[in-house]
Length: 424
Image 1 (cartoon, rainbow, N blue to C red):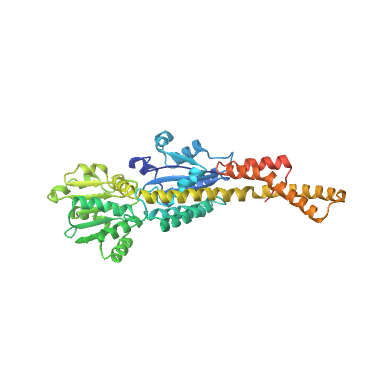
Image 2 (image 1 turned 30 degrees about the vertical axis):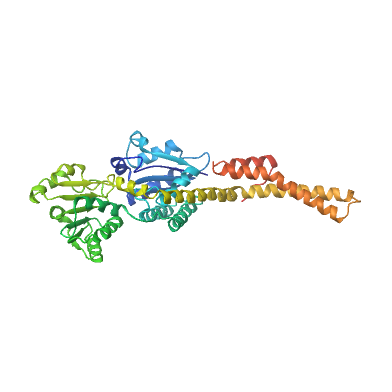
């Protein structure tokens, strides 16, 4: 089986591309169901977060989907022409694909180094793929290996120091606009995981008031009560925005919640007091044109990357340590996989050669009338050493070829050359 990943992230694609590529839970489920129907011999996990959309694949050596089909499949799922997204996609196979997954799950590839959300998001992506029977013998163990690598990396390096979420980085922008939060009103639009994490960071700034609004009123009340904030009806969203000083939006929507025309009157009504708008949504929750309104300061998820890059530069030593941990585990994964996939073939070859050697030994010993017992032991040891030396090169080559996805080719060649039976 060949392992591959194709996708886009905050390094390869701007926000206006990423938001068109994003999958909600429902569309992701439907897409996986379609993948299983189209490619029943392959496996897939679809990971979609605010900063990336990635399709992980395990396919037969000569099976589908290969890169062109994978790009077409992704484009079709999002109703996009393939040529519009292909320039923003990256593609890795085999060891590079596994290394990429380990880096993603360990947050080395995140906008905010050490952020904790990606691990949970990846676990959810795997659970959905398992629910849709899109993973079997390869991607499931691979992703669980990635979770183990991420745990080790966070325990043995300092990548988790400092900012741990996009939300915490977002509040750095608030500090650039306001010197103090104690007289400010903050409005949180959305009650999902990122919204709650951001709200928790916001509360450490001691704002005067914190409001929470959400399309589901019960969830807004629940979150507000948990964090000693005040829930506000979503139906009066524009009113709450006009009365706030900081607005943080993190909602799953297909179109912006707030547009320039809706808020055109707000600057004058506020007497042009600064209004900070932090858009953490993919697709974007706030129309880009809002930045044209006087006294409005709008930042989206791409604007946060600058702070994330600064944080990353300060963690170069931890990144290097993490890369070494990942490199070792990538090699270990393919070595283990090679043993599982071709180990039975190598064992059958060893058994066949040992049987030949034993028969030859039994044929020769009656003719060695002058040989005493110590001599016979030397002959047995010589034959055992010969078996090991004969098998050394084919075993080494198969293990080396595993990272290229070609171990099975060599195993099949051994079967044909030595007429070995199929091994389970």
